[in-house]
Amino acid sequence: MTDHLHISDHEIDGPDPDLARDVASSLRAIPDFPEPGVVFKDFTPLLLDTALRDRVVADVVRRRAGAVDVVIGVEARGFILGSIIAHELGVGFVPVRKEGKLPADTHSVSYTLEYGSATIELHTDAVWPGQRVLVVDDVLATGGTAAATVELVGRCGGQTVAVEVVLELGFLNGRDQLAGTEVHALLTD
Image 1 (cartoon, rainbow, N blue to C red):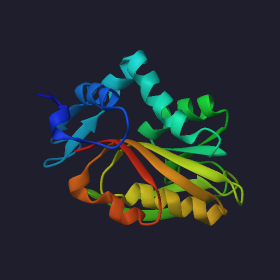
Image 2: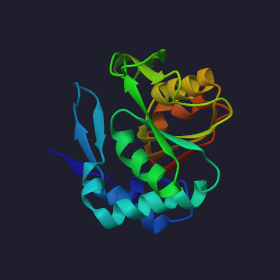
Image 3: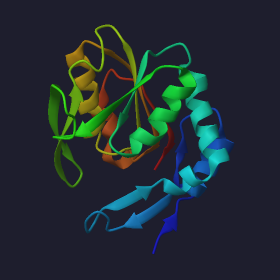
Image 4: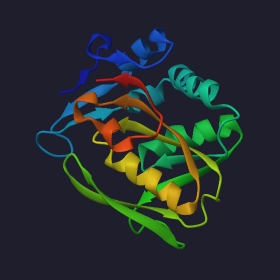
């Protein structure tokens, strides 16, 4: 059984409460996935609604136009919105992948998740020194993935302008991992 999230369960981090309400009503909470005790926040219904997806992208583009040189999408759901946002901003797109998925030389960072650990990688030549980078993902949970991505950007010599997510799981305190980095979440649960 899945439950859709409700706006009354969330704080809104932005100027468009109508967008936040519509996004909240499109998200699903799936209990015990990928393992018992974890509630997975599924945003695939948002992707099916082209008008809503376009509104989310436009919201980010409005905030970031002219302020970034490249967009990084975090595997895997960050690839989806990140590539669309990069296209709309007219900038390049770079994937951050799980360990062993990128073919050229990489930087890698290991980190802790709410239900385990992981390692992500970025090609060493994907971000140039001084480039302004926007990191995009679907959910900010413990902040480990986002913090690892920011570290990867720094290893390449880039500057993370901000981390943009659709949903922040505020009770997991992920922003604490991103001190000094601007974080924007459309919704906070």
